[in-house]
Length: 250
Image 1 (cartoon, rainbow, N blue to C red):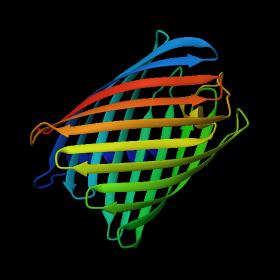
Image 2 (cartoon, rainbow, N blue to C red):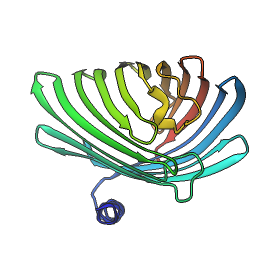
Image 3 (cartoon, rainbow, N blue to C red):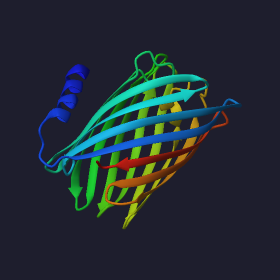
Image 4 (cartoon, one colour):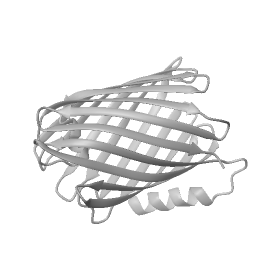
């Protein structure tokens, strides 16, 4: 299945599509982290390329490098969004062979459907395969759309069998657009929130995360985005992050 899905996503880039819209986005992120009382600095940089052939139909690829405590991992991702009438579908594959801290393989699928005016209900599944553990997460969600604004509520239910962790997370996401300005807010709280980061030494339990983003369309081709994040899990893990990206349409 992974090989067939990868081939399909790669083929989607090569298919002749009239008036395809391309976007390139370089991104950098800096994080100050504390794990069990030890301070560390995490850095990541990446480049994404996406191609939209019609509203709701997009394929993308992401190449990313992450550095933690002098150790570096590289990750390659392929994904696609597709609209089928009242249904939206999403699939993504990620590969980081021989990774020290990133998942070596990531699989994610999601589908949602219109259930009322401006209201969509969906279900997602994500599997992370680390060298030291595997994490499975299911995500039922409900989203309300009004123009370019979006408000979504999700409940993540998962399991880390290797570390014997039951993952339970409530997540709220809000996006507000005013002209060329876009503001986003992400809030999450629950148990073993940071298992998806692959932190076997953290083992905190209850945690929270918050992210505030601001995007400004500089012109018709370029959009600058800044993100501020903070999160913690009990007394064992804390992260403060700053990310900057620039989306460009050739």
